[in-house]
Image 1 (cartoon, rainbow, N blue to C red):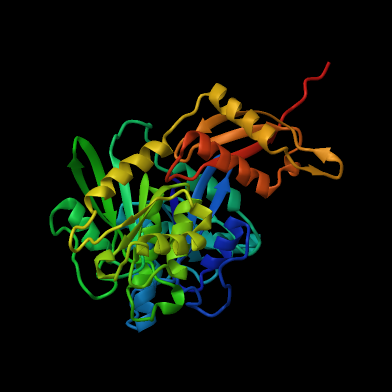
Image 2: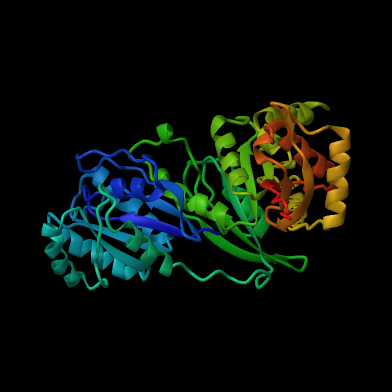
Length: 440
């Protein structure tokens, strides 16, 4: 799981500019008006051999009672709570303020690793401004300029030093399950049904679950941790007064540390654009997934209803046609007992390893069935393949020229591997590498 790094600080200290500099793209809105960034933005970033996710937050105004300021403060607090490392950004030209002191105190209480960065010091004449920030007691301040790119390497070095050590694989045999979906589709009801107790608050009011709640349990000798997450709603559907916007990062973080994702949708509402986006996030993260169609007891049915429903949903979820569907009623308990069966199955599929011999037999058969594509007189040649990782199963295929790999042929090979080896419920990743010819 990639570490999470949150950039926090007062409004207008340059957080979004630094965020854009670190991820190498202009993603956050950058203006001189304080408070422009009201929603967190997140993006994957990489420095040397480290990969992590960066979170840009709205500014913290500790003393303000303004509605939006209060919401932004709560939003930043949740980002702080979720993050592994915090970059506390201050304005070197403006100098140390009472608000900086209050934010620093809040960060100390979080017990998280903190890197103090003094921004807008883009000329040597401003460098003396750094000394007053030692007063915050957060270690040595770093001189940076998000605008000019000054000090970015030193900042990233310090951030990466504080990443948590990776846990040894196989140390924990628990299966981590994240339950995700829009608000009010029955996620908490499903969690309670699986746990056999009222662990999560169940309400008709959308967004009752604001935080991601971990619940360990054991069933048939297998240990699990299930995470009931706050509902993920489209940004334009979130009013300023809603707390839901603050919970999206926690829900996404829960997906990242999950082994299996249960994507819950409402049978009465059908599959929405937002359901597809949530499923897409689990797919992009390489997570084994099960599509849970809840409230199935409320649907008028005939003998073909389930197949029609599934066919319509598969059209929208073409990118993850590997995921099984399960039609349940968390409220009545209908088919709930099958959920953990599916979880165990897709979990095992995500950890499946294929021998190099069997893999290359399948590759050769696939090549015979459908000849690799050619472009400008050059034909793609596939030499051999090997599996290099699990969760998701990842394969490297050595070729003569990776630019000749067409998306459609890559998709064909993926489908052929699935037909041969299964991989039900899990994405698989195919990587193409140019084979270096031996000289001499």
